Image (cartoon, one colour):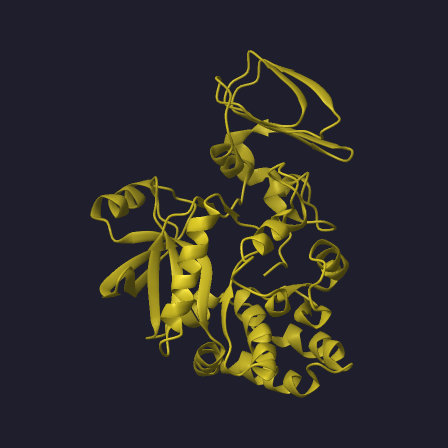
Length: 339
């Protein structure tokens, strides 16, 4: 899934080129390329699909060279994750009715790639045994109020549990309670299932979306597909897959995992996952000198020479002709400042 605009990572992330197409971490690969790289050895490139905005087709094809252009699906507008997943599911079913697939966001950071691959392979094996929906729950390392939580039910088999309930983003007191009680994981937004199972559940719980996909289906893999999608997709209900299916289905399971995951939603999350200097500054850029500054997140262009003096717990980020300097504690307001 690669259709978001990443507004909280401004000024690097813009509607013209959002964060999934940027090298946010400074390692030479964009977020969508890193997502693609993680499936090397698991998924053949001919089985990779991307659902994105109509505005980002060229970026996808440029950054994921060798992908089948017919596997790049273009949404004419944003309708949240359930219609996105429905569209790709109906199309995969047409190509391979026996397919088993994973749905993953394109802009997440995963540090322990080998462990991630083990979990994905184990997940595919689990959902391949029957009519099952599996989500990956991230073992919480702290009482974070920025994530939704998943409550585990009874153990199903080694390392997999029945999914008991989803919990909305909690306040700090509740988050601390979840960690003390145990049996709760962060909701990662990553899913594994067979195409038969997810199509059946979408038909059951969001029939209005399924009806629209049925109308589009006869045009799939033809020159008329995009015209049909442009006309009909906007009629889909705006709804997440969590609300549409996961909170209602009786087929849901959760596999707790720990592979250095972050949804990398904010500059603060990048700060917490980056290496720090002796003053807790995280710096991405070749020519940045920190003087009497502590707790800062700095992301500068490689060719930019910068001296930063006397800042505490700030974000300093420059991209193209725009410079952002603000308190880390105010990062949720960033998307207000550039609207």
